[in-house]
Length: 176
Length: 198
Image 1 (cartoon, rainbow over the protein chains, first blue to last red):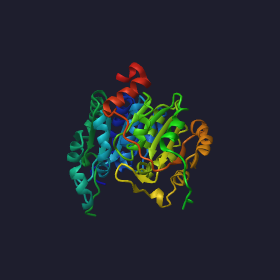
Image 2: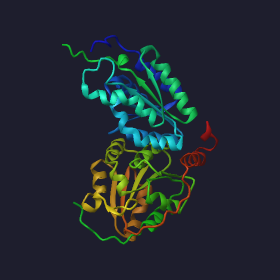
Image 3: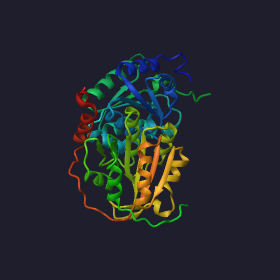
Image 4: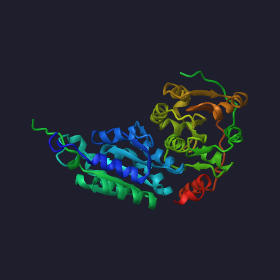
């Protein structure tokens, strides 16, 4: 890793945004970029953190979360966004709020060519599936973007995807 | 491979017998026939899925986690459940005590031309759920077995998984409630009162 050698504070900023938003359920498919956030969620007694086998499960689960009167968030890597498409139809038809945090691969400094097809189409695909898409590339703005995205999702009944750029997360240096 | 047994259960009689005991339980249906079956017994505590094949079990999980004091029943078909075998692993790992899944299993994709599903070819969904760490699982083939199982469905610590093998009888679509936003808002208002619109 080169670009993200300093201890990152943005995962904590996201966690604080979750607390302000009243997030009670966090569904995730693990991603290295979300390691710290996943730990924080599991450690918080007021949050139920649920590990999924595939991202689409989380879209369906968070529809149930809202039906039951709670707020949730879904964490995934960009390669998982494509798995969600048909389930996002439920969100659109029923006007469920859905806050998705997508850690990006296949962009800034990517070394693995197999990450590019999904990474480069994530924003388009989510947008076409009815989600508002907000890309953030500045680590200092991640927390506020998640809070703003959550407010939009929960008060307008829409899917909002916050794409956390690879520039924020850092990339593997393949030159060594 | 599950041993083939003849079933004498009718899908609507089976679901009707289950829902007659629902009390204040919350119900999520899968798309297709179980949605229509439940529609004949419409209730504001029912959320109908008309799409998103494979979503039913996980909608049930999110609801069960949010409403831990209420029983949550998911009623879906074998085709819909086969599309979400991974969800059984997620639910088995999470072990929600208040969640029960009922699969109305006719071994057919009845919406798309009555093609056989894998449950007609030996795939045992209750066996999958058991292997995925569900607390109680079973398969019933007749009314007597079903009646003996219904109390477990509502009272056993979950997650519970019941397969009701049913005949291939097809019924007409009997639900007119299709608008997803309305179905969602009706459900939330019945459950949460004025907080539904916070």
